[in-house]
Structure formats: C-alpha cells, structure tokens
Length: 222
Image (tube, rainbow, N blue to C red; front, side, top):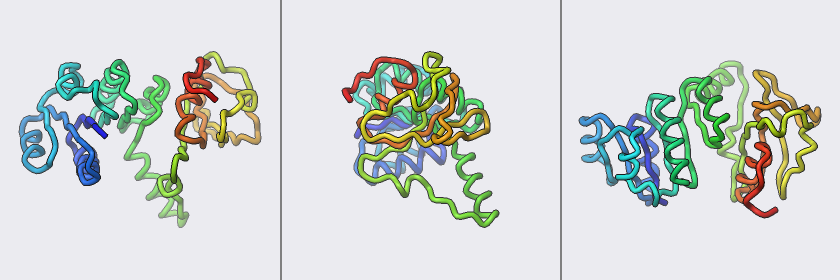
C-alpha cells in the first residue's frame, strides 16, 4: 500500500516505522525543517518538508496514487482540513487524529469514518485498570474481514427507529450514543440526526452502511 502520513510527531513516526517494517510505501509530510531532516536520515521513506494543509504538499506526495492518508499532526483543525483535501482526491482510506472531543464529533459529522483520539483511548484504559476492570480492545477481536464501525445519523434518517433501517448482509447494530447516553439495539431507539450508531459488519459493507444512515443511495450492491 502507498500511505501518506502528515505529521512526524510520536504518533506519525511510530506508525511509519510499523508500516515500513510491513513493507508498505510510506510518504511523510512534515512542516518543521529540523524534524523533517531527522526523519529523512533515520527512516527508509520519502519525506516532504512542507505544510500539510497545502494542497501542493499532497500533490507532491502524489496523493492520487495513495491508498490511505493519515492526518496525524498535533492540530485538530489542520487534520480535518487535510482529510477534506484527501476526500476531494477520492483517497480510499482517510484516518484523522483528534485530541479534542469536540473536533472528534465534528470530524464524524463531516462523514469521516476513521477518527482516532489517542488521549481518550489511553485515559479510558488507565481508568478502567484503576477501577479493577479488565477491558478487551476491539483490535484484538477483529479478524478477517470483520469490522467495527461508528456512523453518524443524517437528517434524512431522523425520526425513524433503528430497526427500520434494515442492515445489509452480515451486519448487526450494537446500539447508539446520544450525547453521553448509550442506547442498546434492543431498546429500538428513535433515531435523531447526530446520533452515533455502533455497528459490526464486514469490510465490503462499510460504505453501504455509511450511506444508509446518511439517507444516500448505496454504491455497493447488497
């Protein structure tokens, strides 16, 4: 795979090292000159010293050939802008890092399916451990083409019940978050625009489910 990582901080560097080890083609975009030079000297990948929010930087990284773009800078607003630019180039996978939960919500409302919040994930694991609760990370459960995903409900699907939206293929709804309250599937909640629905499905159905909850026409056959 050809993967563009924007931001050579700890997250971007660790990810790049893992991907290079797995023999993926990695291109890193980093705006800080000294950091970009250091990365170029230590990692076996292409390094572009430019501002990642500039379309020219992504063009130089040949974004049209990219299989994925990871926006991993320390600025949430920049990461969302990078994601929007990548979307215009129809990059198959766009992953956005956010540190502020408000921007995490914004990114999901903009339709980005892969949004990570490292501080929230780490804090939750630590808090659970201090309470004596052992949690299972979803990454240890995902095998083959099984995917866990969350999707934001669009205006067109508001006021319908969750059960009214028939899941395609091998898909199960887990429940939904509304503000800070979780409603299980068995409650058959009435959907509201902005709800975050948790779904377990197969890889081939991910796009179809995203379109289903936005009220769009599926591009992948059932």
